[in-house]
Length: 290
Image 1 (cartoon, rainbow, N blue to C red):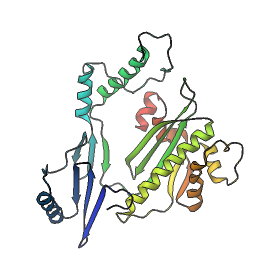
Image 2: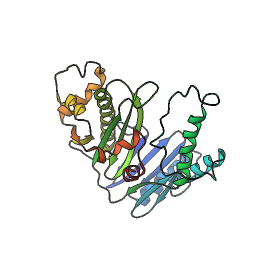
Image 3: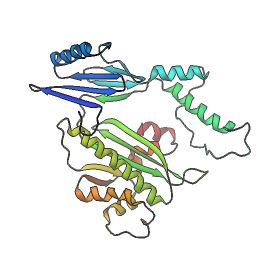
Image 4: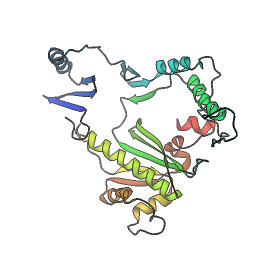
């Protein structure tokens, strides 16, 4: 059983490895030896009532296409089904999920009850973007390096209703996007950036611990941030006025920086991958980051 992820199981035998992942009553497994994998499948079939579906092609709503050069993961069927369900199958495609001119607020004077017409139009815009990109896939290259890095960003006070900031983080294993998040945080620019960076750090450390079960070892993990103030707070052991409102639980970021687990690196805004999770972007920037 994995030391961190308890749904992950590893079996090593004679230099070969079998990897098993369990989600409720669904199981996916594979390995470096066909004989070892077949042996596991046969034993599971004897012990439990289960059906073997063969090569992984579909899992938890995800479509998987495997090849020698890597693996594609997409949700084309789910996308088409949801477009059909809401009668958006024949809608005009849009090239981005949200217009940079859209500024959503409470819309107290808008038509219809909650959600207002303006809110429904924003959701329809997302559907029209899905219409434009039904088979857009995540690509996991077999040639990708096994290096970890993370990106963290925050859009200060972007919400027009409560002035909260939207933070975005993403984590990559080599060139492969593995996890990401977008959430609301509050108060100052420094605090928003710092909390987002702490969240990204937490995810990277979890991934590092999980991957250690595979025998992978990492030195300092680069965490790329475009906020010099957030980096300064993490590197400065003296609390001052900019940090007094930050909950103490987020200061583990500073601890792991001092331990050498992560390396906080400044990145230019135009190269900040996490920017795509924080706010609407114009088409060129959106496509480049995507």
